[in-house]
Image 1 (cartoon, one colour):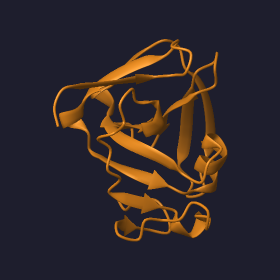
Image 2: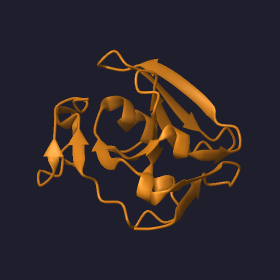
Image 3: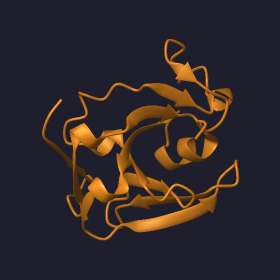
Image 4: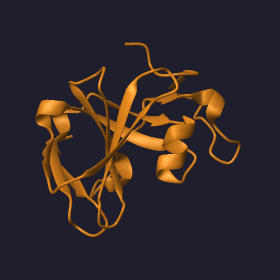
Length: 138
């Protein structure tokens, strides 16, 4: 586990980097908002300290009030639409990188699953990891 991790969108208009050693954790989120935003059964996210993430390019941001009342913003490429990042106003020190946007996501090991009650049979929760029916406890 070493070095700088890089990623970006499909068309290359957005690029980012962070140091792998600074990653807080990674997880799967099965909430219905993440399902809609990814077009999948879940979002696999990497928790990165906000001050460790460097982004080049201008993201388009869509914001909502989440199921639990938090103010969630999702950043994506305005050119190709690739989802890149999420952040929550109530947790300003953390950014959530979409694992699939990494140039090399092979090192990711999801440590938990959230919103397990929203998971579908075709994209089940990994029951060998921690899981909760909502957001993780702070």
